Image (tube, rainbow, N blue to C red; front, side):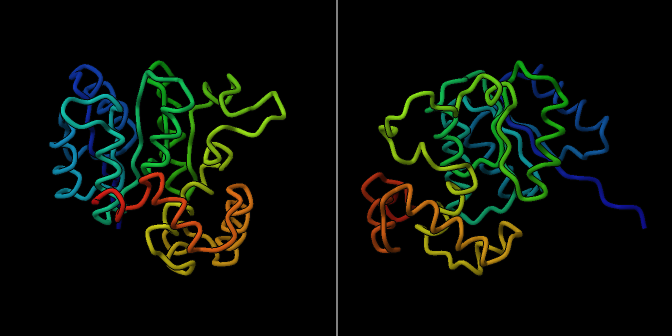
Amino acid sequence: MPESPTTVVLADDHAIVREGIAALCTANGMAVLGQCSDGPSAFEMISNLRPEFAILDLHMPMVTGAEVIRRLRAAGCTAKLLILSISRDESTVMEALRAGADAYLLKDGPGRHLLDAISFVRDGGVYVSPLLRGAGLFTRTDRRPPEDPLAALSPREMEVFSYLVNGLRAKDIAELLDISPKTVDTYRASLMRKLNVHDLVGLVKFAIERNLTTTSAQR
């Protein structure tokens, strides 16, 4: 039997951008299940159609792409969620990754980056545009600690952090990320060291104080 095509949903308020991405996806054997132009429609379409991948513009009308991702993750969405943006600043990138994005891509990057990102995140990775990495976005040239300790976490550590503070066990996280529980423990030890937190209770308290848990977001 032939393999089923990869399924995709596209969300961007510029039709010409959506159509270009749709053409790229179709030309590479993917099936575009739907397209929309604003945040609420994106949330509903992704929830209902359950694609393998969703590509969202960061700055959409009514609800941003990052907030759509945050709501989808809170609702248990397991799709791979990719952000497209023109923004290059570190705080914006980190906000998207903390929300649960699997990739952050620049709109002025080549189409190859999107295809690379889809391949990379399918295997459990978190993809950040090479244009950002090449510009040294996440490279600190001084020896001072970052103002926000979360900025010291790698994308995968940020992902494990998000799952931990929302109540998932190491075994569940390992299954979601397709890694071993021992690897989850390694990430957990590393991120706790970077955040100067010594147990799970302290980690949850840290997250609640910064409004980074599903529970605190609903308060």
